[in-house]
Amino acid sequence: MKIAIREPAPFFSNGDEDSFFHWLKSIDAVKDFVGSPRGLEVTLEDPVEDLSLRELVGLLTRYGLDMKCLRGLRTQQNEAWFADEQMYWHKSVFKD
Image (cartoon, rainbow, N blue to C red; front, top):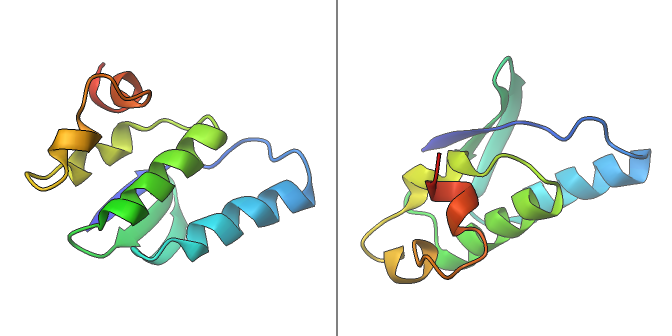
């Protein structure tokens, strides 16, 4: 499974950029990523485990990135918490 994440622009320092990529690499579900015209094409394990999905939500939230790329990660197994309208990310992920 692949998602496209728009990279933060600009990074505020070299350490900021290092932190972003270190966090992305540390997420268990992230198998690979490569830059593309659409942003970072991130290859994920399928299915994405809950902890990894929570980390992706945290990373994108922290860097103020478009979270709509996470929509396709909704499953019957995670929708009770991931698609819960009370969660702070719901509008950012699921509303246009």
